[in-house]
Amino acid sequence: MGAYDIPLMSAAVFGEELDSKAYTRRIPISGSFEITFRCNLRCTHCYCNLPADDRQAREEELKTAEIFSILDQIAEAGCLWLLLTGGEPLVRDDFREIYTFAKRKGFLITLFTNGTLITPKTADFLAAWPPHDLEIPLYASSQETYYRITGSPDGFRHCLRGIELLRERKIPFSLKTVVTTQNKDELLQIKSIAKRLGLAFRFDAALTPRIDGGKAPCRLRLSPHEVVALDKADTQREQEWREEFKKPPEHIMSDRLFLCGAGMTSFHIDPYGKMGICDMYRFHTYDLRSGTFREGWNGVIPLLLESARRETESPCPTCLWTAQCDNCAGWSWMENGSLEAPVEYHCLVTRLRAEAFGQNKEII
Image 1 (spheres, rainbow, N blue to C red):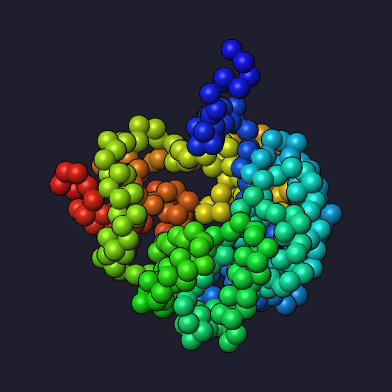
Image 2 (image 1 turned 90 degrees about the vertical axis):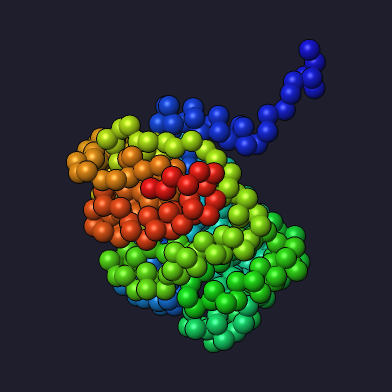
């Protein structure tokens, strides 16, 4: 058989096999890195939302050299996919230094940015050093609504300008939005903008509490009925949910609370060097300023996963639709201060989705 006779493996299959092997060997192939909590916008739904000029936050953030050291360590440990996010990453004066250092290490970088700080010079930089993926949230289709959500009187114009600058340089990226009570009436127009620009688009209505415990973002949630109505109104989304509900129920047989890749193949690092298993669970972390990534990954994180065991009679393990529900131990912690208490909002949304898209009518 010649070299060109070997069947090519699809990217999806390759990714699944890589994830499976990494999980078995507990290799941290995927990481998210919040390089700042500071941002030039003041979004009402944000989970951190620190002003861009917050002096204390700036002083407490990891310094450039510290970030370089962490990037060296996670590369050595096997990290391949790296998300750089915030806050707004571009508010850091050393963003380009951090980004190019990460690129030279060989990471496949996904960059989350609100797009409003993208200038021609920044766009040229990203064209020269293209990310593996880039996502920009488009929160509205009008300046009025964008202002109401972000507090920026000219943010909508700047966001559209940033989007156009990336398009002009043919940098691959996509748009997204979080649907709240403030912009739900503009979702169709937002989708139309993305379609007109020829950009992939996704939306979500899942809002988390703030990391300081504040519940203000939760008050902006759509009702569960409104969430499912949006699912029904989007042909592709409806079909995806129908396929999801064709899958047989997956009852949880383990008493472990973290059953995903968190702490097994993925990790999260905040702007101050605190490493945890994911961005949803920030209670138990390891300080990378006082130790190495390997020490945390091989020592503290396994102990956390092992100690997080189910101790109460939660309905989640026996729920018919656990696999289709957004609830997880991390979200339970943010919402309820407990790793086991179900998030009622997710329960209600899942029940309604089961009724709307399930193949049988046996509802949880």
